[in-house]
Amino acid sequence: MKKLLALLLVVVLGLSCATFVTAEEAKAPKYVFMFIGDGMGTPQITATEYYLSTIENADKPFPMPRALSFTTFPYVGIMTTMDATSFLPDSASTASSMASGIKTASGVINYTVNDALETQEPVKTITEYAKEAGKKIGIVTSVTTNHATPAAYYAKVPSRNQYYDIAKQFVESKVDFIGGGGFGSPDNKGKDKNIYEVAAEANINIVDGSDAIRNIEATDERTIAKVCDGAMLYEVDRLAELEKGNDIASLADVTKAAIKAVDNDENGFFIMVEGGKIDWACHANDAYTSIMDTVAISDAVQVAIDFMDEHPDETLIVVTGDHETGGLTIGFATTEYDSHYEVLANQKLSYEKFTSIIASWREEGGKTFEEALAFVKENYGLTTEADQLTTLTDTDIQKLKEAFEVSMSGLASSDQTAAQKLAYGGYEPFSMIVSRIINNKAGLDYTSYSHTGLQIPVFAKGVGSELFTGLYDNTDIFSKTMTAMRLADKISQK
Image (tube, rainbow, N blue to C red; front, side, top):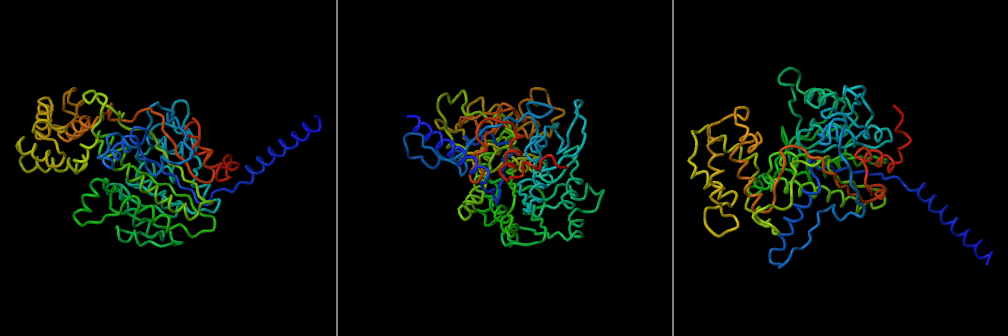
């Protein structure tokens, strides 16, 4: 019996040591993808899956599951997002937490702050560590490339509003590729030399337009690849352009371009991809537009998954959000225990596109309310006809009429009553109320025009992905990714 126990002890110790050695000797990922859906929390992901499930299984008598590309990943965690300022953080502080592992104040990018929330000193980012380890660096975003989230992966500024300084820091950085939208305020409102001229003088290659981006090849040149001068189109508007024959590059296309541009180094790469307009759509309480942009980032993740299929033992993919935006809720009072996501499929344009159309109505001398309702019927499916899911109630029509009158008057949000400010949130009143009505008829609603403090899901697959399970803080995204890359021992170095 004693011999048996001794033998078992040897076996157990042997297995323990074997496990330890395996963990220590596990290979670091050569290729690392970090996907961030700005404003993308569990509600946005859930609403997108439910919408797709409803549309794709319209003939089924009961709800059918429909996963996004990343919601089937084997390892899932959840993270807190508060910053040094608030439980309701902004993108600058939350992106900084994930990029450099610090808690900082809202509006600050990669600077520490003291107890008085005054900025102290800049900190080192994960892209800098990765570059020192020999990896190439790529950054992709659907918004302007000097916006808060992409900036957190190459810049350090006391204020996220220092757009020109942020863009200059990209030129001065060692980031190999940046693409998607263009730089916002590239000449600092006429005060400075255009940043693209500065980049060209620094021998940075500038690739302009969808066709050129799709034809990018591996290069040793640093590259700026812009689909357009500002932010990329919302996915719903891009698809509308595609129907007209205008094939504008998607977030997935730019992700493919980033991979091609930087996949020529024996040490691999680190690529951060942001779906930035999920956040913007949710600020405006436009559920369908946020859903389609969530589909867009899912498609971009699929590009990384396809790459992983070719490099299964060398790739890590992490997908998360920086915070939730809008307080999106799955369920609404009038739909009770039911939902009607199919009504969202009637929407043909984003709130942003609709806002520009309303502005043109105003400039042209206005439309009648009846003409405006006809437009809403054509582009949102909302109708005055009876007994349909999209039928406008008397209350709906009254709210639309009030909002239409405010929109046509051109009344600035600063001059609106408190009730109007609450109803329209600073957005185009008529567009806002149309979005709210179709959301509610689908069984969705928002509680805010701002960010919320919801915890955010994290999905991981590949080498080191097991590190991302459990409940943790957003600063741990930095530390866990550094651990996966076997760079954790470098964190204390300045």
